Length: 153
Image (cartoon, rainbow, N blue to C red):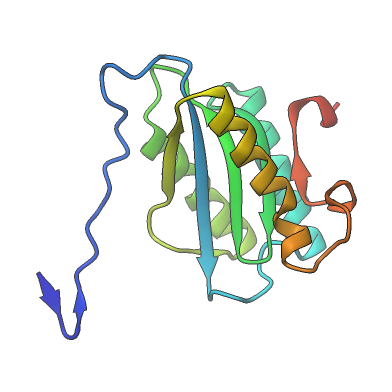
């Protein structure tokens, strides 16, 4: 299990359990490499990433409720159609954005199913405040690198 001095990283399958509701909301975090570099918030890259999120939304590959870019990672709230694999949808999206935008994504992603309204609100607030906590803006409404369905029209 050990590779050198570090434990070997396991692959995550990202398969929702059969008892998970069809409309389950997942909080997703995807990181780019190198950590700490401004990779995702450069204007052309950020604009193209947000457009690709909207395109997948319009194509019903996912139902993104909100996506927010930070310099080296993305947070989002996603619902997946029951006939689509979360892992394959993200794998395809990451492959496309890596090739077209030159992003070096970390392998895999973090997902957590939101189980109740309180947790949803708490996590949503955490994500919206992320640019403020990072000292990038004073007001979360000033952060331009965010996509929500009602703001895309």
